[in-house]
Image (cartoon, rainbow, N blue to C red; front, side, top):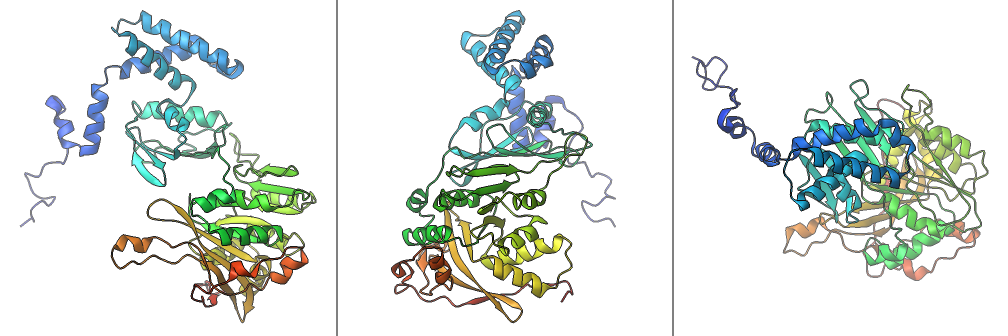
Length: 483
Protein backbone atom coordinates (compact mmCIF):
# COMPACT_ATOMS: atom_id res chain seq x y z
CA UNK A 1 0.00 0.00 0.00
CA UNK A 2 1.42 3.36 -1.02
CA UNK A 3 1.54 5.99 1.74
CA UNK A 4 -0.72 9.00 1.34
CA UNK A 5 0.87 11.66 -0.82
CA UNK A 6 3.50 9.23 -2.19
CA UNK A 7 4.64 9.05 -5.75
CA UNK A 8 2.57 5.96 -6.35
CA UNK A 9 -0.72 7.64 -5.49
CA UNK A 10 -2.73 7.64 -8.72
CA UNK A 11 -4.71 10.78 -7.89
CA UNK A 12 -1.73 12.86 -6.74
CA UNK A 13 -1.70 16.24 -8.47
CA UNK A 14 1.26 18.48 -9.14
CA UNK A 15 1.57 21.50 -6.86
CA UNK A 16 1.10 23.93 -9.76
CA UNK A 17 -1.75 23.61 -12.27
CA UNK A 18 -0.79 23.65 -15.91
CA UNK A 19 -3.81 25.73 -16.90
CA UNK A 20 -3.35 29.51 -16.89
CA UNK A 21 -7.03 30.34 -17.43
CA UNK A 22 -9.04 32.44 -14.99
CA UNK A 23 -5.98 33.29 -12.91
CA UNK A 24 -5.41 29.66 -11.87
CA UNK A 25 -1.64 30.11 -11.94
CA UNK A 26 -1.78 33.08 -9.57
CA UNK A 27 -3.81 31.02 -7.13
CA UNK A 28 -1.21 28.26 -7.15
CA UNK A 29 1.85 30.51 -6.80
CA UNK A 30 3.21 31.48 -3.37
CA UNK A 31 1.56 34.56 -1.94
CA UNK A 32 4.56 36.90 -2.43
CA UNK A 33 5.09 35.86 -6.05
CA UNK A 34 1.39 36.08 -6.79
CA UNK A 35 1.23 39.61 -5.39
CA UNK A 36 4.21 40.71 -7.47
CA UNK A 37 2.82 39.09 -10.60
CA UNK A 38 -0.54 40.76 -10.01
CA UNK A 39 1.17 44.13 -9.62
CA UNK A 40 2.97 43.72 -12.92
CA UNK A 41 -0.21 42.59 -14.63
CA UNK A 42 -2.00 45.64 -13.25
CA UNK A 43 0.66 48.00 -14.69
CA UNK A 44 -0.74 49.00 -18.10
CA UNK A 45 2.53 50.66 -19.10
CA UNK A 46 4.97 47.79 -18.58
CA UNK A 47 5.09 46.75 -22.24
CA UNK A 48 5.07 50.38 -23.33
CA UNK A 49 8.16 51.15 -21.24
CA UNK A 50 10.07 48.20 -22.72
CA UNK A 51 9.04 49.12 -26.28
CA UNK A 52 10.00 52.80 -25.96
CA UNK A 53 13.25 51.83 -24.23
CA UNK A 54 14.32 49.65 -27.14
CA UNK A 55 13.28 52.17 -29.78
CA UNK A 56 15.19 54.89 -27.94
CA UNK A 57 18.42 52.86 -27.97
CA UNK A 58 18.00 52.07 -31.68
CA UNK A 59 17.18 55.69 -32.57
CA UNK A 60 20.02 57.37 -30.71
CA UNK A 61 22.67 54.72 -31.31
CA UNK A 62 24.89 52.96 -28.79
CA UNK A 63 28.02 54.93 -29.78
CA UNK A 64 26.42 58.22 -28.70
CA UNK A 65 26.20 56.96 -25.11
CA UNK A 66 29.99 56.68 -24.93
CA UNK A 67 30.94 59.98 -26.57
CA UNK A 68 28.25 62.52 -25.64
CA UNK A 69 28.47 64.67 -22.47
CA UNK A 70 25.99 63.62 -19.80
CA UNK A 71 23.82 66.78 -19.91
CA UNK A 72 23.50 66.68 -23.69
CA UNK A 73 22.84 62.93 -23.64
CA UNK A 74 20.10 63.30 -21.01
CA UNK A 75 18.44 66.03 -23.11
CA UNK A 76 18.53 63.91 -26.28
CA UNK A 77 17.18 60.83 -24.54
CA UNK A 78 14.36 62.82 -22.91
CA UNK A 79 13.38 64.34 -26.26
CA UNK A 80 13.47 60.95 -27.98
CA UNK A 81 11.31 59.36 -25.29
CA UNK A 82 8.80 62.23 -25.52
CA UNK A 83 8.62 61.90 -29.30
CA UNK A 84 8.06 58.15 -29.17
CA UNK A 85 5.34 58.51 -26.55
CA UNK A 86 3.58 61.10 -28.72
CA UNK A 87 3.74 58.74 -31.70
CA UNK A 88 2.36 55.88 -29.64
CA UNK A 89 -1.40 55.42 -29.58
CA UNK A 90 -1.62 54.83 -25.82
CA UNK A 91 -3.81 57.56 -24.25
CA UNK A 92 -1.98 59.35 -21.42
CA UNK A 93 -2.73 62.23 -19.12
CA UNK A 94 -0.13 64.98 -18.76
CA UNK A 95 0.99 63.63 -15.35
CA UNK A 96 1.26 60.08 -16.72
CA UNK A 97 3.19 61.34 -19.74
CA UNK A 98 5.74 63.19 -17.59
CA UNK A 99 6.07 60.24 -15.22
CA UNK A 100 6.75 57.83 -18.08
CA UNK A 101 9.33 60.18 -19.61
CA UNK A 102 11.12 60.32 -16.25
CA UNK A 103 11.00 56.54 -15.69
CA UNK A 104 12.10 55.55 -19.20
CA UNK A 105 14.90 58.14 -19.18
CA UNK A 106 16.10 56.68 -15.87
CA UNK A 107 16.02 53.20 -17.42
CA UNK A 108 17.98 54.29 -20.50
CA UNK A 109 20.59 56.46 -18.79
CA UNK A 110 20.68 55.28 -15.22
CA UNK A 111 19.67 52.35 -13.08
CA UNK A 112 15.89 52.32 -13.39
CA UNK A 113 14.04 51.60 -10.13
CA UNK A 114 17.36 51.83 -8.26
CA UNK A 115 17.80 55.54 -9.06
CA UNK A 116 15.74 56.92 -6.11
CA UNK A 117 17.31 54.38 -3.74
CA UNK A 118 20.82 55.37 -4.79
CA UNK A 119 19.89 59.03 -4.27
CA UNK A 120 18.41 58.36 -0.80
CA UNK A 121 21.07 59.28 1.75
CA UNK A 122 19.37 57.13 4.39
CA UNK A 123 19.87 53.92 2.39
CA UNK A 124 23.23 52.27 3.03
CA UNK A 125 22.77 49.01 1.08
CA UNK A 126 20.47 47.79 -1.70
CA UNK A 127 19.68 44.12 -2.25
CA UNK A 128 17.82 42.98 -5.39
CA UNK A 129 16.56 39.38 -5.28
CA UNK A 130 15.26 38.89 -8.79
CA UNK A 131 12.98 41.37 -10.53
CA UNK A 132 10.27 41.31 -7.85
CA UNK A 133 12.08 41.97 -4.56
CA UNK A 134 14.20 45.00 -3.69
CA UNK A 135 15.34 45.33 -0.08
CA UNK A 136 17.33 48.16 1.47
CA UNK A 137 19.22 48.66 4.70
CA UNK A 138 18.16 51.82 6.48
CA UNK A 139 19.36 52.69 9.97
CA UNK A 140 20.90 49.24 10.32
CA UNK A 141 17.56 47.48 9.63
CA UNK A 142 16.41 45.66 6.49
CA UNK A 143 13.13 46.68 4.87
CA UNK A 144 11.40 45.79 1.62
CA UNK A 145 10.62 48.58 -0.83
CA UNK A 146 7.69 48.99 -3.21
CA UNK A 147 10.07 49.28 -6.18
CA UNK A 148 10.38 46.44 -8.69
CA UNK A 149 11.73 45.75 -12.15
CA UNK A 150 9.39 44.91 -15.02
CA UNK A 151 10.93 41.48 -15.52
CA UNK A 152 14.25 39.64 -15.32
CA UNK A 153 15.26 41.01 -18.72
CA UNK A 154 14.81 44.57 -17.41
CA UNK A 155 17.00 43.80 -14.38
CA UNK A 156 19.59 42.10 -16.61
CA UNK A 157 19.84 45.24 -18.78
CA UNK A 158 20.53 47.39 -15.72
CA UNK A 159 23.21 44.96 -14.50
CA UNK A 160 24.79 44.91 -17.98
CA UNK A 161 24.91 48.71 -17.99
CA UNK A 162 26.58 48.80 -14.57
CA UNK A 163 29.29 46.26 -15.31
CA UNK A 164 29.98 47.40 -18.87
CA UNK A 165 30.58 50.92 -17.56
CA UNK A 166 33.61 49.66 -15.63
CA UNK A 167 34.95 47.44 -18.40
CA UNK A 168 33.52 44.17 -17.09
CA UNK A 169 31.05 41.69 -18.53
CA UNK A 170 28.48 39.29 -17.14
CA UNK A 171 26.93 36.42 -19.07
CA UNK A 172 26.52 32.66 -18.84
CA UNK A 173 30.26 32.11 -19.22
CA UNK A 174 31.01 34.65 -16.43
CA UNK A 175 27.80 34.69 -14.36
CA UNK A 176 29.07 36.69 -11.36
CA UNK A 177 31.02 39.89 -11.07
CA UNK A 178 32.28 42.47 -8.56
CA UNK A 179 32.48 46.07 -9.73
CA UNK A 180 32.32 49.65 -8.54
CA UNK A 181 29.97 52.48 -9.54
CA UNK A 182 31.43 55.88 -10.50
CA UNK A 183 30.53 57.27 -7.05
CA UNK A 184 32.54 54.53 -5.30
CA UNK A 185 29.63 52.25 -4.37
CA UNK A 186 30.52 48.55 -4.54
CA UNK A 187 28.29 46.13 -6.43
CA UNK A 188 28.06 42.37 -6.72
CA UNK A 189 25.93 40.71 -9.38
CA UNK A 190 25.13 37.06 -9.99
CA UNK A 191 22.81 35.71 -12.66
CA UNK A 192 21.35 32.35 -13.76
CA UNK A 193 22.33 29.56 -13.96
CA UNK A 194 24.08 30.19 -10.65
CA UNK A 195 21.14 32.14 -9.22
CA UNK A 196 17.90 30.18 -9.26
CA UNK A 197 15.67 33.18 -8.46
CA UNK A 198 16.77 35.33 -11.38
CA UNK A 199 19.49 37.99 -11.55
CA UNK A 200 20.58 39.25 -8.13
CA UNK A 201 22.33 42.53 -7.41
CA UNK A 202 23.83 43.88 -4.18
CA UNK A 203 24.95 47.51 -3.90
CA UNK A 204 26.92 48.77 -0.91
CA UNK A 205 26.65 52.52 -1.19
CA UNK A 206 29.72 54.66 -0.78
CA UNK A 207 29.39 56.84 2.31
CA UNK A 208 29.38 60.46 1.17
CA UNK A 209 29.81 61.75 4.71
CA UNK A 210 33.05 61.50 6.65
CA UNK A 211 32.50 60.50 10.28
CA UNK A 212 34.92 62.01 12.75
CA UNK A 213 35.80 60.34 16.04
CA UNK A 214 33.63 62.85 17.93
CA UNK A 215 30.62 61.82 15.83
CA UNK A 216 31.26 58.16 16.59
CA UNK A 217 31.30 59.09 20.28
CA UNK A 218 27.96 60.90 19.88
CA UNK A 219 26.54 57.80 18.18
CA UNK A 220 27.81 55.71 21.14
CA UNK A 221 30.01 53.62 18.85
CA UNK A 222 32.93 54.63 21.08
CA UNK A 223 33.19 55.96 24.60
CA UNK A 224 35.03 59.28 25.07
CA UNK A 225 37.84 57.56 26.99
CA UNK A 226 38.25 54.84 24.35
CA UNK A 227 38.25 57.44 21.55
CA UNK A 228 41.02 59.40 23.26
CA UNK A 229 43.02 56.24 23.91
CA UNK A 230 42.69 54.92 20.34
CA UNK A 231 43.69 58.27 18.83
CA UNK A 232 46.80 58.20 21.02
CA UNK A 233 47.55 54.65 19.84
CA UNK A 234 47.36 55.74 16.18
CA UNK A 235 49.62 58.75 16.80
CA UNK A 236 52.01 56.49 18.72
CA UNK A 237 52.45 54.21 15.66
CA UNK A 238 50.88 51.04 17.00
CA UNK A 239 49.94 48.38 14.47
CA UNK A 240 46.17 48.06 14.70
CA UNK A 241 43.78 45.39 13.38
CA UNK A 242 40.08 46.34 13.15
CA UNK A 243 37.82 43.30 13.21
CA UNK A 244 34.11 42.84 12.58
CA UNK A 245 31.43 41.36 10.37
CA UNK A 246 30.18 42.56 6.99
CA UNK A 247 28.80 46.09 7.01
CA UNK A 248 29.45 46.83 10.69
CA UNK A 249 31.51 49.95 9.97
CA UNK A 250 35.14 48.77 9.94
CA UNK A 251 36.07 51.15 7.14
CA UNK A 252 34.18 54.01 8.79
CA UNK A 253 36.10 53.44 12.03
CA UNK A 254 39.39 53.17 10.14
CA UNK A 255 38.68 56.45 8.36
CA UNK A 256 37.89 58.18 11.66
CA UNK A 257 40.98 56.90 13.49
CA UNK A 258 43.30 57.71 10.58
CA UNK A 259 42.79 61.43 11.26
CA UNK A 260 45.25 61.01 14.16
CA UNK A 261 48.10 60.15 11.76
CA UNK A 262 50.45 63.17 11.66
CA UNK A 263 50.28 65.10 8.40
CA UNK A 264 54.08 65.01 8.01
CA UNK A 265 54.02 61.25 7.35
CA UNK A 266 53.72 59.57 3.94
CA UNK A 267 50.68 57.28 3.85
CA UNK A 268 50.01 54.60 1.24
CA UNK A 269 46.54 53.03 1.16
CA UNK A 270 45.85 49.72 -0.56
CA UNK A 271 42.29 48.56 -1.23
CA UNK A 272 40.29 46.13 -3.28
CA UNK A 273 37.78 48.93 -3.98
CA UNK A 274 38.79 52.46 -2.96
CA UNK A 275 36.66 53.49 0.02
CA UNK A 276 39.13 55.14 2.39
CA UNK A 277 39.13 58.91 2.51
CA UNK A 278 42.10 60.02 4.52
CA UNK A 279 42.24 63.69 5.40
CA UNK A 280 46.00 64.12 5.18
CA UNK A 281 47.67 65.70 2.16
CA UNK A 282 50.52 63.23 1.58
CA UNK A 283 48.45 60.15 0.69
CA UNK A 284 49.03 57.71 -2.18
CA UNK A 285 45.97 55.61 -3.01
CA UNK A 286 46.39 52.21 -4.69
CA UNK A 287 43.52 50.02 -5.87
CA UNK A 288 43.58 46.40 -7.01
CA UNK A 289 42.46 45.61 -10.54
CA UNK A 290 40.31 42.61 -11.52
CA UNK A 291 40.71 40.67 -14.73
CA UNK A 292 39.53 42.28 -17.95
CA UNK A 293 37.09 40.86 -20.50
CA UNK A 294 39.79 38.51 -21.81
CA UNK A 295 40.51 37.25 -18.29
CA UNK A 296 43.88 39.00 -18.06
CA UNK A 297 45.45 41.99 -16.38
CA UNK A 298 44.61 41.18 -12.76
CA UNK A 299 46.61 43.08 -10.13
CA UNK A 300 46.09 41.63 -6.65
CA UNK A 301 46.34 43.36 -3.30
CA UNK A 302 49.42 41.24 -2.57
CA UNK A 303 51.16 42.74 -5.60
CA UNK A 304 50.27 46.24 -4.41
CA UNK A 305 51.54 45.57 -0.87
CA UNK A 306 54.89 44.41 -2.22
CA UNK A 307 55.10 47.43 -4.52
CA UNK A 308 54.11 49.83 -1.72
CA UNK A 309 57.12 48.73 0.33
CA UNK A 310 59.33 50.19 -2.43
CA UNK A 311 57.53 53.55 -2.28
CA UNK A 312 59.04 54.68 1.04
CA UNK A 313 55.88 54.59 3.15
CA UNK A 314 55.70 55.86 6.72
CA UNK A 315 52.33 54.18 7.13
CA UNK A 316 50.64 51.33 5.28
CA UNK A 317 46.86 51.24 5.41
CA UNK A 318 45.33 48.10 3.86
CA UNK A 319 41.58 48.38 3.50
CA UNK A 320 41.04 44.70 4.23
CA UNK A 321 43.18 41.57 4.31
CA UNK A 322 41.41 38.56 2.89
CA UNK A 323 44.04 36.43 1.20
CA UNK A 324 47.73 35.77 0.59
CA UNK A 325 48.59 39.47 1.04
CA UNK A 326 48.34 38.87 4.80
CA UNK A 327 51.84 37.37 4.99
CA UNK A 328 53.29 40.42 3.20
CA UNK A 329 51.41 42.73 5.56
CA UNK A 330 52.81 40.90 8.60
CA UNK A 331 56.33 41.06 7.23
CA UNK A 332 55.96 44.79 6.59
CA UNK A 333 54.81 45.36 10.17
CA UNK A 334 57.75 43.33 11.45
CA UNK A 335 60.36 45.10 9.33
CA UNK A 336 60.08 48.71 10.39
CA UNK A 337 56.71 49.83 9.02
CA UNK A 338 55.14 50.69 12.37
CA UNK A 339 51.76 52.33 12.63
CA UNK A 340 50.09 50.20 9.94
CA UNK A 341 46.34 49.72 10.01
CA UNK A 342 44.09 47.13 8.40
CA UNK A 343 40.72 45.41 8.79
CA UNK A 344 39.54 41.80 8.72
CA UNK A 345 36.26 39.89 8.88
CA UNK A 346 35.94 38.11 12.24
CA UNK A 347 33.55 37.80 15.18
CA UNK A 348 35.95 38.46 18.06
CA UNK A 349 39.57 39.51 18.69
CA UNK A 350 40.52 35.87 19.20
CA UNK A 351 38.82 34.85 15.96
CA UNK A 352 40.54 37.75 14.17
CA UNK A 353 43.99 36.41 14.99
CA UNK A 354 42.87 32.89 14.12
CA UNK A 355 41.73 34.14 10.73
CA UNK A 356 45.01 35.98 10.16
CA UNK A 357 46.78 32.68 10.79
CA UNK A 358 44.50 30.91 8.32
CA UNK A 359 45.07 33.58 5.66
CA UNK A 360 48.83 33.25 6.06
CA UNK A 361 48.51 29.52 5.41
CA UNK A 362 46.60 30.25 2.18
CA UNK A 363 49.72 31.99 0.85
CA UNK A 364 51.39 28.58 0.58
CA UNK A 365 54.27 29.43 2.89
CA UNK A 366 55.99 26.47 4.53
CA UNK A 367 56.24 27.77 8.08
CA UNK A 368 55.46 25.96 11.33
CA UNK A 369 52.42 27.27 13.19
CA UNK A 370 54.54 28.57 16.04
CA UNK A 371 56.56 30.73 13.64
CA UNK A 372 53.35 32.13 12.12
CA UNK A 373 51.96 32.92 15.57
CA UNK A 374 55.19 34.62 16.55
CA UNK A 375 54.88 36.79 13.46
CA UNK A 376 51.28 37.66 14.38
CA UNK A 377 52.13 38.40 18.02
CA UNK A 378 55.06 40.58 17.00
CA UNK A 379 53.18 42.42 14.24
CA UNK A 380 49.94 43.52 15.93
CA UNK A 381 49.74 45.66 19.04
CA UNK A 382 45.98 46.15 19.23
CA UNK A 383 42.77 44.52 17.99
CA UNK A 384 39.56 46.59 17.85
CA UNK A 385 36.33 44.60 17.58
CA UNK A 386 33.24 46.38 16.24
CA UNK A 387 29.78 44.79 16.42
CA UNK A 388 26.34 45.47 14.98
CA UNK A 389 23.67 45.38 17.72
CA UNK A 390 20.22 43.90 17.34
CA UNK A 391 18.71 47.38 16.99
CA UNK A 392 21.01 48.21 14.05
CA UNK A 393 23.51 50.39 15.93
CA UNK A 394 27.24 49.76 15.69
CA UNK A 395 29.42 49.62 18.77
CA UNK A 396 33.04 48.83 19.52
CA UNK A 397 32.83 45.85 21.87
CA UNK A 398 36.52 45.16 22.60
CA UNK A 399 39.79 47.04 22.53
CA UNK A 400 42.27 44.22 23.06
CA UNK A 401 46.04 44.26 23.44
CA UNK A 402 48.16 41.54 21.83
CA UNK A 403 50.65 40.69 24.59
CA UNK A 404 52.88 38.15 22.88
CA UNK A 405 53.60 34.44 23.00
CA UNK A 406 53.26 32.13 25.97
CA UNK A 407 54.31 28.62 25.08
CA UNK A 408 52.55 27.98 21.73
CA UNK A 409 49.70 30.48 22.09
CA UNK A 410 49.23 34.22 21.62
CA UNK A 411 47.92 35.92 24.75
CA UNK A 412 45.46 38.80 24.73
CA UNK A 413 44.13 41.18 27.33
CA UNK A 414 41.08 43.42 27.04
CA UNK A 415 41.73 47.09 27.77
CA UNK A 416 38.15 48.26 27.07
CA UNK A 417 35.05 46.05 27.03
CA UNK A 418 31.36 46.61 26.28
CA UNK A 419 29.40 44.06 28.28
CA UNK A 420 25.95 42.61 27.48
CA UNK A 421 23.05 44.45 29.08
CA UNK A 422 20.96 42.37 31.46
CA UNK A 423 18.22 44.33 33.20
CA UNK A 424 16.35 41.20 34.31
CA UNK A 425 13.20 42.45 32.58
CA UNK A 426 13.52 42.46 28.80
CA UNK A 427 15.35 39.43 27.32
CA UNK A 428 15.99 41.44 24.12
CA UNK A 429 18.32 43.72 26.07
CA UNK A 430 20.71 40.82 26.50
CA UNK A 431 21.60 41.27 22.83
CA UNK A 432 22.62 44.91 23.47
CA UNK A 433 25.90 46.15 24.86
CA UNK A 434 26.76 48.71 27.50
CA UNK A 435 29.13 51.58 26.64
CA UNK A 436 32.84 50.73 26.52
CA UNK A 437 34.40 50.56 29.97
CA UNK A 438 38.08 50.26 30.87
CA UNK A 439 39.05 46.89 32.28
CA UNK A 440 41.52 48.35 34.76
CA UNK A 441 44.53 46.68 33.15
CA UNK A 442 47.44 48.79 31.94
CA UNK A 443 48.73 48.06 28.42
CA UNK A 444 52.30 46.86 27.97
CA UNK A 445 52.94 49.17 25.01
CA UNK A 446 52.95 52.42 27.02
CA UNK A 447 56.73 52.59 26.66
CA UNK A 448 56.39 52.20 22.88
CA UNK A 449 53.95 55.10 22.81
CA UNK A 450 56.31 57.18 24.94
CA UNK A 451 59.21 56.49 22.58
CA UNK A 452 57.10 57.98 19.79
CA UNK A 453 56.33 61.07 21.83
CA UNK A 454 52.82 60.12 22.93
CA UNK A 455 51.77 60.06 26.58
CA UNK A 456 48.53 58.44 27.74
CA UNK A 457 46.65 59.87 30.71
CA UNK A 458 46.31 56.99 33.18
CA UNK A 459 42.88 58.26 34.24
CA UNK A 460 41.28 57.08 30.98
CA UNK A 461 42.43 53.54 31.82
CA UNK A 462 41.12 53.71 35.38
CA UNK A 463 38.92 50.67 35.88
CA UNK A 464 37.63 51.45 39.36
CA UNK A 465 34.06 51.17 38.15
CA UNK A 466 34.67 48.06 36.09
CA UNK A 467 35.53 44.53 37.07
CA UNK A 468 38.92 43.31 35.77
CA UNK A 469 38.98 41.17 32.65
CA UNK A 470 41.32 38.21 32.69
CA UNK A 471 44.01 37.60 30.11
CA UNK A 472 42.74 35.09 27.54
CA UNK A 473 44.99 32.88 25.42
CA UNK A 474 44.51 32.60 21.70
CA UNK A 475 44.45 28.95 20.66
CA UNK A 476 43.77 27.75 17.15
CA UNK A 477 41.04 25.13 17.38
CA UNK A 478 42.23 23.00 14.47
CA UNK A 479 45.69 22.86 12.94
CA UNK A 480 44.94 20.25 10.36
CA UNK A 481 47.66 17.97 11.73
CA UNK A 482 50.47 20.51 11.20
CA UNK A 483 52.99 21.28 13.94
